[in-house]
Length: 142
Image (cartoon, rainbow, N blue to C red; front, side, top):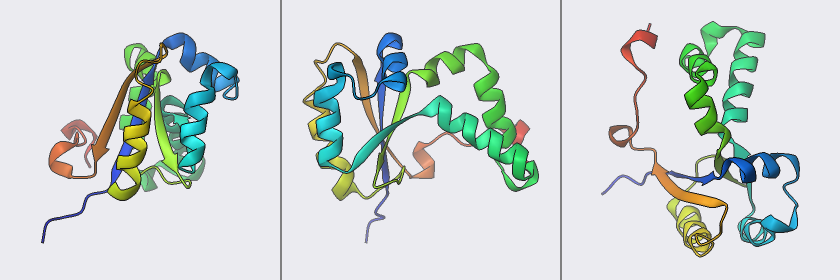
């Protein structure tokens, strides 16, 4: 029996759209996107914000309990990576950042129908297979 991986969908937006979406996600410019998201019980979260929240929580609760703390902190403090993650948004479905293929695939198809949108630069679907995901660099392992 094959492994059933979970998935995550991310959108890359233009810098201008990303900033505007963070400030006013209900703007009419995003109405089609928001309709697709609503149809799937989904919301967008800026990856930079998610990383920043993780770092803040680790600093508040004790970094020793957060294996990815230093790697994540270094990432958000790197100007080039910060710029990238400020434009990258993770799709959460029912509050979850990873979900079954049965949820990811129909949402991905609908989002791809918006691909001609001027503000969506890319749509990516990632699975949870460790062989296809970046592993923590050795310098951050304890």
